[in-house]
Length: 166
Image 1 (cartoon, rainbow, N blue to C red):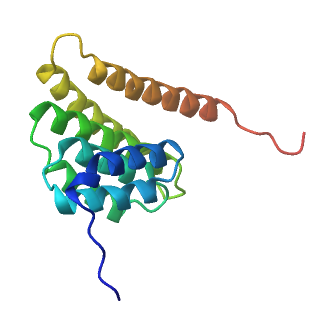
Image 2 (spheres, helix red, strand yellow):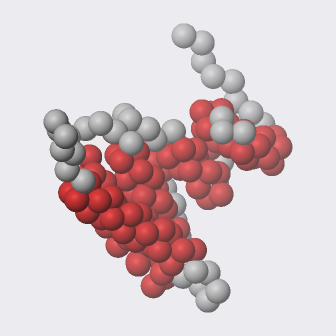
């Protein structure tokens, strides 16, 4: 296997813009690759670490174990306590939605627990936030609404008992 080529430090701003564009185009795998190239040159680049974390979680679907592990590794590299709490919530929330889409046994119960974990992280981020930054509250409310919808669907399914032979 060939070794990867390194980008120059001067290319970081342009590469960052390109990574953002690929993410907007739903090509998170390309965003992830560019972020890794940037981080080879500038390992502490916090905005790029956040973009990498988001690009990895954009790829959550049925099989999320390795992706969740990698996103948590990136989370550990964030230096700001607010961002660590907020993005821990983002990881858990996105993981919960992937769990909801899976066919695994007890997926809804697992997803509900994961959503509650996300809400705990968002509450921590809310405590650490700067005035005027209610992003964590918005995400917490989204999680709560998802849990409410899940409960309503569960109740509706319990009420619906098909009668056969009528």
